Length: 208
Image 1 (cartoon, helix red, strand yellow):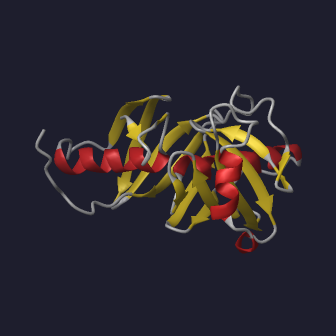
Image 2: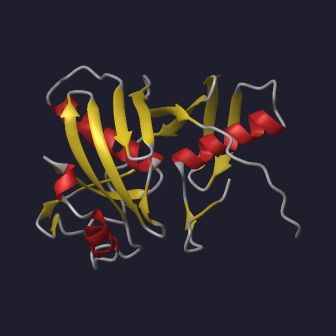
């Protein structure tokens, strides 16, 4: 799977895109299969069809150190930032009220900040329950998006890191995005499992 952003740039990984790819394979070519292995620019990923429209993806482990952000400023536009990558690098700001911030204004500033040599994705996260987050994402190469799988995983990873410090038992977490909900958990190896719907919207043919 090669994922191409709206500006033509290539992304290493797309959590929603890979579920859509699995949905396409399930519908069109591999109707009898329930497990799919798809090679991405972030490595081989395993996707499971859970029944109905639900697919789960093993997104791998979060990385808290990367050349994309190791030397980055920790505060930009008066926002305290954490950094993590689950396939794609993210600057993450936990805020008390996500609706008070203009992501369309903040997104381009942080994406293109001098701290990030390869640009960066940015997201606002509001904790609305012990195992429930509200997330809005600005993607590098795309802008405002309705949903983002790697962004949801990044927010989850930082929440789990906080829980680990406080010795709180790991739970399933629901991530609310403008385009819908995703469910996140960890397996015994500490890999992030993301689950959510993938629905066929149309079929078409392109002549090349």
